[in-house]
Length: 221
Image (cartoon, rainbow, N blue to C red; front, top):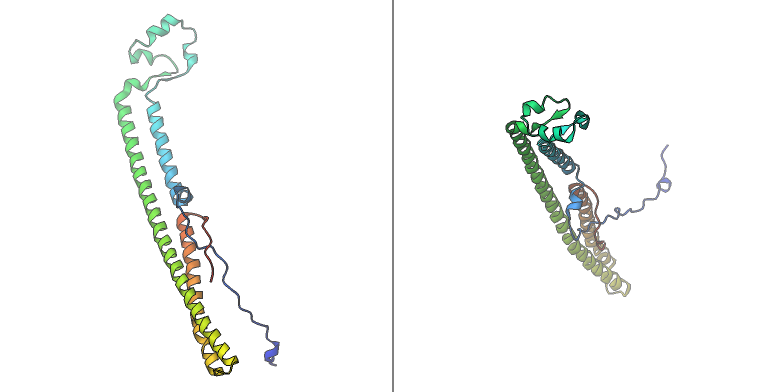
């Protein structure tokens, strides 16, 4: 058995969520640094640089001090003047300095790998900046379009108000007053669509920045 129209729930208009779609005054690197892809690339670079430091550390002697227990200062002084073959006979003592050719090649290879990662990281940063610039520009364009659209809404509202005032004073017809509402609704729909696009674009900007940002609030029409 059907129900009448009175049984239907009342429908009320619901506005879009208020989202701050303003552009930050500055887009510092601190914002970009939150991007997961840049964080991952930076970690790779830092890890490779640590390997360079480790390769450099190999140029310094590595030994266990306890290997020299029982030796007096004279023996220690003469010990470091001997050949590498003699020094390597002492347990716990390793002097890779004497294998400088291999170490230099190792360090050069490690540095080359680091340079490649750094180049990739720099390119990732440039790509991130490009993404932010594109999304920020699109959002700014939508903000400008909304300002102009809000002016159109105000203009049609003024015409509607004039038609209603003329109706009350007997200078206009009800048909004219009703027809004056149609442009208002049309312009309001266009404004609503722009607000929807602005919200979507602001999400894209947040995504390209790797997180939210603080910006001056834009006035809503």
